[in-house]
Amino acid sequence: MIITVTANPSLDLTLEVERFEQGEVNRSTSKHKDPAGKGINVSRALHKNGVDTAAVFPADASVGVWIEKALTQSGIQTITTRITDEVRQNITIVDAQGDTTKINETGPSLSADEVSSLLAQIAGLLETEPEWLVAAGSLPPGLDGSFYVALGKLAHEHGVRFAVDSSGSAFKEIAHAGVADVMKPNHEELEELAGRELPTVGDVVDFTQTMLGNPSAAIVVSLGENGALLVNSRGSIWAGHEPVTPESTVGAGDSTLAGYLSADVSLSAEESDSESGDIARISTAVAWGSAAVQLPATTVPGPKDITITAVHTVVNPSHTTAIKELHV
Image (tube, rainbow, N blue to C red; front, side, top):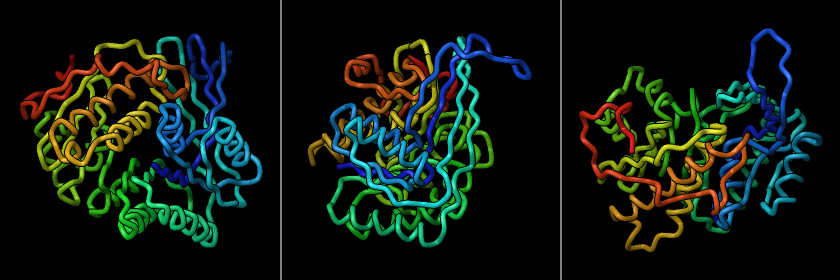
C-alpha cells in the first residue's frame, strides 16, 4: 500500500484552445474536469497501473466532496477530513502548440483543529504499515514546510518510508531536514534551492548528495525533455525516453514519482539495494512521466500508454556533461 497526502487538493479545469491570446476572447475546443493536487495525481497513476493506494486530503462540503466522489467512482480509496473553507479550483489553458498556462488558487485556510484531524487520520493509516507515505504538492494557508517535516518524522516512527514532492519554501524546509527517503524536485526547483545555476550533471549530483538524509535515501531530479537523474549514495543514473510529441505537461512529474514508487514496491529485498534496482526505478519513472506528457490535460497513463523499452539509461554519466546535452 502507498498512501498519499495532498494537503492542498484541487479541482482542475483544463481548457484546450487553438491559440491562447492574452487580453483577447479565447474559445475552448474542449475541456476536462479532474480531481487533482500532486498527491492525488500520484494515487490516480498508481491505481491505474494496479498498485494499491489510498489518497488522504482535506475536503469541504462542495468542491472537496466532488473530488472525493470522483476518486471513489474510479475505484481509489479516499480518506478525508472535513474543513470549512472551500477547496481550490485551478484552471489550465493548453494551446495546440502544447504551451501551458496555469491559474492556481491559493487554497483553503486550515484551522489548528482541522490540521490536528488531518494528522490523526494519517497516524491511524500508518498503523496499517504501508510501504510508503507520500506528501506532495503545495501547502494551503495555515501550513508551512514544518508540516512535511512532521509527516516524515511520523512516518519513520511507524517504520514507513517517506517521499515528498514540493517546491518553494516547503521544499526548502524539507530538503535538508533528513526525514525524506525520496524527494523529486525538478531542475528549476533545485536551482532555486541552491541559489545558483546547476548547468552540468556534476553540479546537480554534488548538490543533491548534500540533501541525502540517510544511506538509503534517493533524489529524483526531473529534467523535462532531458530525462531525469537518480542520485543516491551509490552515485547517479540518467534515464531518457526516446522523443515524444507532448500533449500536456500537467501532472507529468506526479506520474514520474508514481512510476518510481511502483517499481520500488515490486523489487525483491536483494534488488532493492542494487544498481539494477536503481535502474528499474528511474527507468519506470521516466517511462510513466513520458507517457503522461503524451496524454491530454491531467490524464494519467495506464499500462497501454507506457513503453519502458523506449527508455535508455547511463550509469554515472560524466559530471562535465551539460544537462541540456542529455538526450537519447
